[in-house]
Image (cartoon, one colour):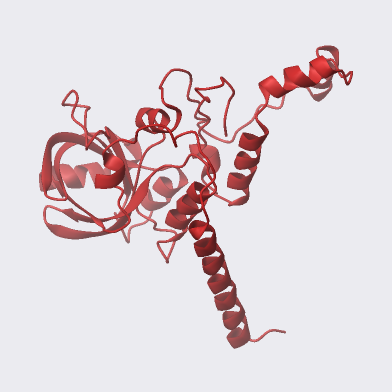
Length: 279
């Protein structure tokens, strides 16, 4: 039996190896991505800058702030002013966010440090944060290192997979300390345009991992009856036009990162250049 001392040493070694591996991959040249020839918005350099931590102060009436926290499960937006790196944005919308992480905190009496979603243009048309209309603030509550999500995004980005921009943010509420968060670019309009050059098409977001399997035999019959399985050149060419192997591999890589929230946050934007779906 491995003693606690030896077990802790083994775990520490594995963590060091994993961190070194992630750092090595980040130093490798990036694979070509769909966004390399697309002009990037200002917020990529002004907000999501790895050289500094974003300073965000949320200004709200204390009673309104507490009411929002007390009713976090409803995920209702409340008006507030926010100051980001010294620039104030008035009348923005903010609400608690999350899925299982939100429900866990609702029943936890020891903390109210929820994740948040900020919508700058909900009450003021056209208001953005250097071109970004929405901002997610993740609390990293289940990660004692506060590094797993950040490193995962950087790793995926280094592999050439379209990935949300992110940066650490120091949050204060009415000038009082609230904590270290990870600011993340939502996978919505700006993300799609930044990576694919257009917001035309559909963006699919499954709300849960519940799946209706249907009738297995009936589904198999539909597959057999409606597909041509002959190995002809035309069939191969048609299939190649419908499938992007690289994107399928990217989707599998993301799944292998073991993101437990992926079923609730999985996004499948269209490839605006080819019309094929991407993972």
